[in-house]
Image (cartoon, rainbow, N blue to C red; front, side, top):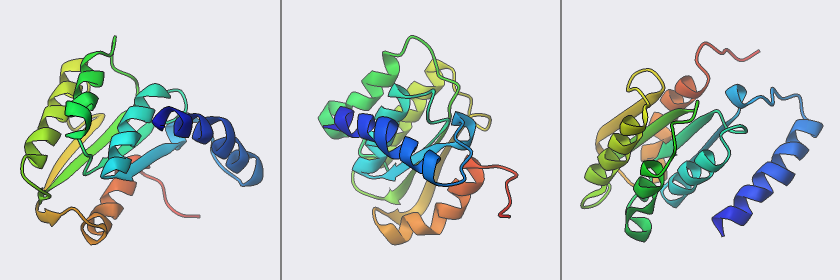
Length: 152
C-alpha cells in the first residue's frame, strides 16, 4: 500500500501542513525520511514524487525487500532526479545489509548521482538496526538535508 500512502502524504498531509503552519513548501525545503522499511518507502516514494520531496533521508533501508526491488527501480529510471539523497547503514544491522546498501548506492551513482555532491552514503561502524543508532546520526542527516540553515 505504499502508493496509497504516498498519495496521502502528497495530496492530504503535506497540503494540510503547508496551509496550517509557516512552512517553506518548495521541494528544496522539503525532505522525506524513514528508517528500515520506512527507509525503503522513503526511497520508493521520493523517486515517485521528485517535484515534492527535494531531499531523501534513506536510513538503514530494507533493501532486501521484494528481491531488492528498490535497486531495480533505480536502475529502471530514465534519468536521475534533482534530489539530494542521504543513504546509510550500520555495520551490525544484519547479514548482507551493508552490501545491499552499497548495491543501492552503486545504482544511484550509475544513474548520475555524485557522491559528496548530491549523494551521501555512510556506513556506521558497529551501529545496529535500532532507534538509538539512528538517533546518534540524526544531526548529520539534518545538516545534510538543510545545509547552512539555523533555527530562528
